[in-house]
Image (cartoon, rainbow over all chains, first blue to last red; front, side, top):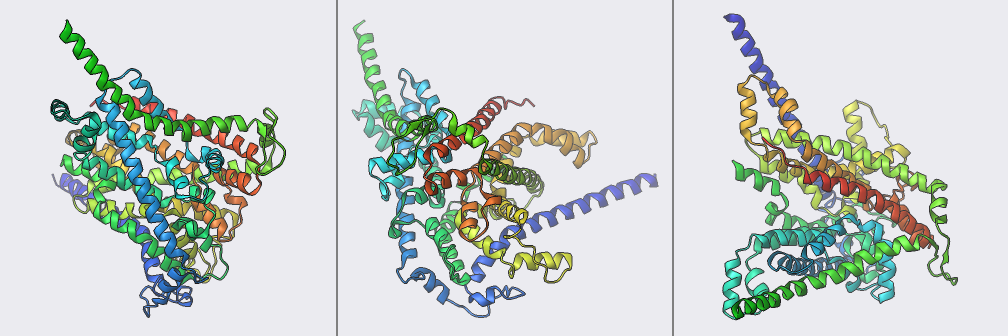
Length: 289
Length: 303
């Protein structure tokens, strides 16, 4: 009898130790993930010599806001970083609008209209997912130069708005869209484009929101494409500007971190506002509870 | 009879709209996806230099042969493999562990997911920049290692030593994306009904046994899918390595294949050779994508 009790007690103790171990692991990993972020924010408020002092002063001694001014102003005083923020905002936004519109249009066409070759078209579109951007970036670069879109917003945006992933997502959504709405609108005399524009699209907010958020993030992050086709300093996007900033010899780590903070703000806002569109796993999971 | 004919012509009228809606994408894909990859295949058979006065010369497979004999190419292959394997294995292992642990806790699931995911929203260039400063000899990476190992003032040469440099790029990429894959695993784990685990526990299995013999096998399709996705992502890496080189790191240990393609085309102006490398990269990734599609097709696990 008491042997069994001891065994139970040991098993419970073992279970508890594992539980504590798991919590330590989870929290420890969370710290690992957050430390660089905290470092970025605190360093942006310190003069460079404080950042490099040993030990690192996790609580800034002063609020060295000159870092932000210097980041915005740039080492040459031309405010090119500010311009790059605007460029990134414009390019990412326009690319998002274009991608979502085109994906919705195409997805709607594939989902709600039966035409000859529909499957072939869908499979062809899916097949583009096998083509990594890095494998076609050089031919695309040459093509864009030939068209004359080098160093333009158009060249940055147009080649990127056809997205197989976006079409896939929107098609999935429209497949479940009730046909009755569409049929009623047809009876009322609306033409097909009106049906798309006034009925289907406005009622696809969840899919549109999720796709917008993911597309914006991808374009905001894009370094390789602007690197290839943008020459003018005023047209640089943020990642391009930062990569040049990092190569300048007279680095001021404080200004660099201030630039990093400024560059991160839009995505932080989007992430906090629309967290669930990034963390679809949580949605799925809490749905099962 | 007339009514049926009328219906058919109406259907046909409507279905034409389907073609109209789909046309813009098809045009764009043709111009900006299919044409470029075809062009890459074609140009890889030519000797073509950007801005050179001579017209491209057909050389057949010479670009490929030269490539396979070139030290720079094999250096890139090794650098890419080192990075890809060194990143994707820890990433998949840790994200699976994290997902399992998060699932087992009853609280803070969303918070942990948010925290682990957050580096993914940073721009790659910015993430690289922050870590570049962290890896500075005077900064917190060295301080942390010294603290843990009880040493004093040892410089682990994060950006200087060849192998440390590769490790540093791996750390940046791992840090940035492990949360993303954790979320993917959570979606996969959520599709395993709880009853199965409960049934196993009732039958006397402890948590460890349940994990090894029940959860893991059921998770195999998800794990394979996630692994291939991670591998493909790692093969495509560019920004981290480019930033590190821009900041002054030596290029040889981290000249991954994408960086090599970029340098060959833009710095060396050798379009034929760059196209050949692009084709090889495409073939490798296409192979992995096909495997991925095949597996997601057969992901019908029956409980």
